Length: 520
Image 1 (cartoon, rainbow, N blue to C red):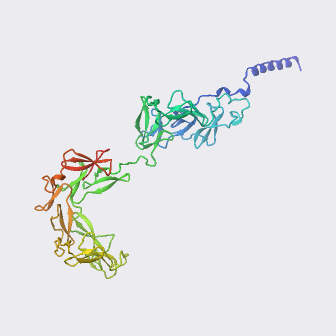
Image 2 (cartoon, rainbow, N blue to C red):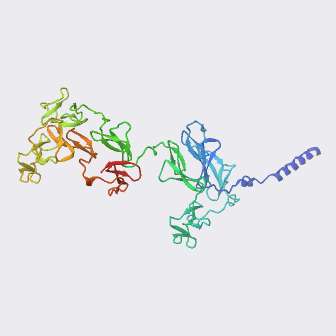
Image 3 (cartoon, rainbow, N blue to C red):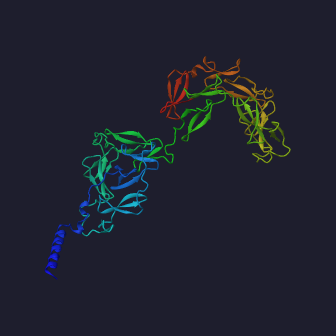
């Protein structure tokens, strides 16, 4: 080896020594990257790389979340909103499932791709994340020891800034917990006691500006802190508020579908002869009685003097009853009503009459009763119901007798129960005449019998016109029944309703909503 070779070796050895002296030790790499800052629970921030994603702090860890399909993250409101204007084109690929990355904020853990999102994962106690090996290894050099010791689960400490609450150790970190209403935190006993001295009553209830909370009264919106007080904010149309994520998400399950208040009444835009009523949380169609229409101003059915509700059928018209071959449908007062053929006959839809049932068309129908069975007729004390061919039909007691429901037989009418009725006299079909026992009603001939009908409330039957007319002159309404305008009475059956006198008539109104329902 020549002196020149020796000089070259010394030259490079000397410079290599200088490089090694200036280089940091291998085991100290990445230790300065430890960030002891803990994120604020629930705080969200936009993802600069994906407009349809955001970061949220949950249980002290920063987790990447993704908005629902068709929505984007609005950094102004810190919520996901429906992308109506096509503002955002979400990133096609978030991460590779199972992929690991260095967590620049926590050397004692790492970031892992789970279900397409980057999630923060902590190494087990006594380990740190080796960025070279991309795995958790034993923390021989105390890389994670610089982090403050975790608290004991369930430990409680005083909150110096809030006498109405305290700090509690949850999942290794202290969190704010409020005492229940009417109590304060006693730091000596470390428990919440009844606030007899009003320690907390003098403290104005305030919130952190921009803070978002669930609105227990409205799943389609939330409460947001504005100028120190919580205000109601609605989610955009087609979304609902997710209390777990504290953001509005697309309402795929119809959580915010149209609902109503039980018993509420609304106008039916498709039918002036009826209305919509809230039943079991949904609006259902209800028809006004025959000869009336729905007045949307008063929210009640009134007499149809102007013929607003045209007849749905021609009076006396007969149609087949698709549900009953042993009967038919007949138009009575503009409505189709079910009528039965006489026993032993069926309805022939071709000639639209009842014929003798020679082929036993109706015999196949299960019998409702045994032939000869007798029951009381609730509509006629002077007769009864008798079973013939499996169905009950009406029968009359002989003149001068009535039906005794206890003995189930006709007995002599000593008390004149049936004397006021003329059962023998027949009538002309659909004929109308006044009812001597009811000035607010009339008698109508249906199937050869006079049937009592009532006019709408607030009207009477005019025997000259043979129609129901509004009772402006109190023809049928006694003086005792007339109320004083504006008078109110409590509804003992339902505290959400009350009675108010309008135009001399007591109407039922809802106390919470301006809804007039019915006359009393």
